Length: 172
Image (tube, helix red, strand yellow):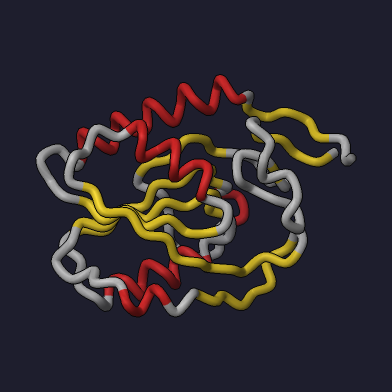
């Protein structure tokens, strides 16, 4: 097993996700929202986040987006075909993402959704890594800003390993 240094404990993550759920609930107060989770990495964060939200009228869907191979972005972004079948028109949409790194994947997804005329489009990210940003995009709601380190745990992986860790760490 690789040597992993803990950046945020399970307790720190739970506290911040709960706070973020309240912030998002306040924003969507008395509104319906379509929550769109970006697989694979967001599944743990998305599950905890929607349970922390008190928004009553919520629809939830997953799509798949991929740009990473190992520890580096491959440069090419691909989306599951399911994205084309989702009706975003006139809806309040909340994209839930595990990490915003270069922002390229998220910017392409945002632009694709905007062509479908949502009423509102916001982004909630577990992690924000602004030092690596290439695309002009930032989260509307975010748990943690992090430095330029490759992180694992809490749904994030290294070649499909370490998603199950209850904390966020970096491989030393």
